[in-house]
Image 1 (cartoon, helix red, strand yellow):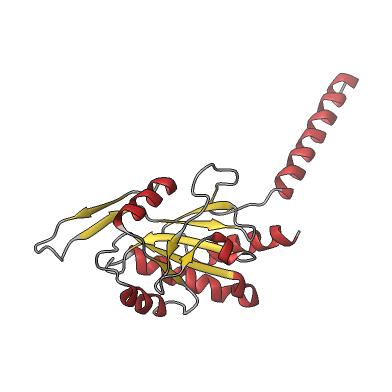
Image 2: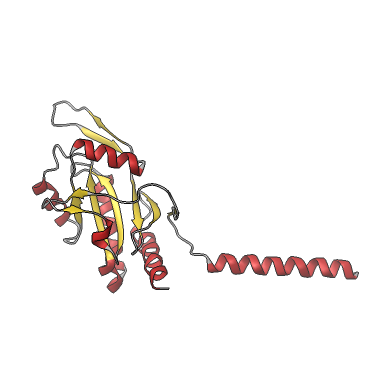
Length: 200
């Protein structure tokens, strides 16, 4: 083997090592990394007790926000249950996780209904309920789709909607977009990474 071939192989090995080092040092999220995204920067809506809530109220915690409605047959309860399970899987770190449920059906999701719904999953979870106009504006800012689908009676309608969660780091910065059905363990792993990045 001539000297030129050896030099080329040496250069390739160095490049491969550098690439591996970069890959190892970068956080490997299972969710979609939205770091630096220019939307979904905050929410300002009243909770079930009428208090205005925003990301600043949960500073120091990882916040996971989800748009849904209490009469949702599967996606919403599954998502909230997975978040509650992820929080448990995180052990003591779970105390630094805040679930936020934003209703897209303020007509039926009264404050009392929302309180009862949150109690089914985790007593620390917060439900937010705006006016129809506030809800539509916030969903647009988050790039979340929802639409009322009529039923057999005026009150039996359902809601088509996006099925994903938004995760914020302890500084209140949007970081992750978690697809529906990713699983509690995958979510717990990602939330731990966000907590670690905050303390690094």
